[in-house]
Amino acid sequence: MDTDKLADKMKLSWVQTMLLYLSVTIGIFTVALPALTAAPYPNRDLWLVPFLMVPGVLVVGSIAVRLGLFFPRQTIIEYSKTLTGPFIGTMIALTYISWYTCFAALNLRLTSDFFITGFLPDTPVSVITGAMVVTSAYAARHGYQVLARVNQLLIPFIVGLVWVLFFLSLPEIKLANLSPIMAGGINHLVHNTIVPFSVFSDIVNIVMLIPYLTEPNQAPRVVRWGVTVSGLHLLVFIFTVIAVFGIDAAKTLVYPGLSLARQIDIANFIQRVEIAILVILLGGIFVRTSLGLLWASLAVAQAFNLNRYEPVVFPLALLASAMAFLLGDSTLEYTALFKPGFIAPYSLVHSLAIPLLLLLLAYLKMGRPSPSGTPVHPDQGCNETADAR
Amino acid sequence: MIILLIFIFLVIILIDVPPLVKQRMWKDLAAFSVLFIIGVVYSLGVFYDWPLPNPVKGLEMLFRFKP
Image (cartoon, rainbow over all chains, first blue to last red; front, side, top):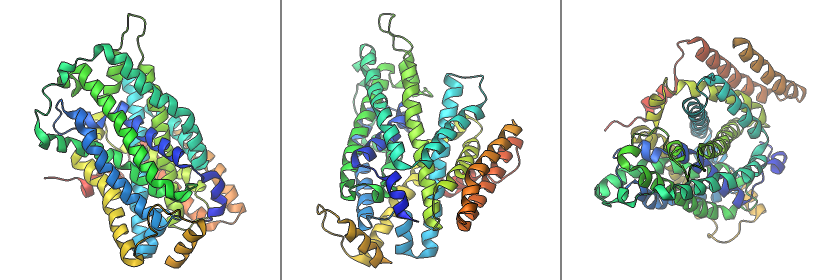
């Protein structure tokens, strides 16, 4: 693909990339909170999950970054062909294309179901899905930079409103709901970590972003800060939900964030703040869906050596919206996809297994990369990729 | 509803196809057409309840872990 033409509309700084990751993770855990609703053993220790999850996700992220810095001017789609040959490389690309399309479809479904059950029960589901997909596809066609800048406008609201919800819920928090701590034992805690670990492993998608960073050697900072800060937000949110409702009520909630916002009532004056959840959801899911479509179309373009990725965005958006309906007939059916039996193997194959294999291959074929910490010179990156070919 | 769907298909074709033909990017046009046809078939399939193979069920068969 002609990278020069893309350069202008795709350039990102590491802070922008980190903020994109924050929106991607915060959007989903405030509304769906799969860490709670899909936990195999929902108990009152769930708020400790981020302490186990963050180190694991940091490992996933650092594998992705190491792999990315072997080829600082290519995405995983391009160098998987270099490392494994054209046939297996294309197979890997197809796996990622389907993963990203599913990623977009799942978000579309999550939004439309949330709107139908929570706010607009009489609106046809296709209207909500359609509005969401058109906006996201439009953003995806305009590249990373536009998306990152829109995200910069959205992120103060997304992050700020999580904290607003926390502070407004403070009067309702009953610390007694959290004791006894660790009654379920470490075993249940580890099992409960699987789902959030799989969701937060989205950090691996930095392999699609590294070549577009203004300074690729800043990628480790994206992982460090992005994962830690989003882990902190997950901690705050899940702590609030459990401390306010108690685990017995909390584990029956379909949308814990929405229920949390609905029960806020300060002196009969601050009420009905669920609009905050709506803003977080719309912002976060818009960024998630746009990134899913952008990654899927970039992957198609790079896998099949197209000149531009833009023409395939709309067809993929069409496919993603059709897939959103195929995910299941009811909310229960598709939220079952978040259960550890499916999401863990599905997500970890893409976020851990394939990158790890590629990293091993890269070490075997090319030796050690330049020592970490030394900046990667742009020309050096180009030479490396040219040599690899 | 179906008219709206066809209208959307036409808009997508009008936005994407003319520049590709003008710039003679046949490979891009082929990729677009394949994905677009799959997209059209599946969106009509969802609308009319056609018995199409469900990719999500396929993924579940591949990745569902049964201890």
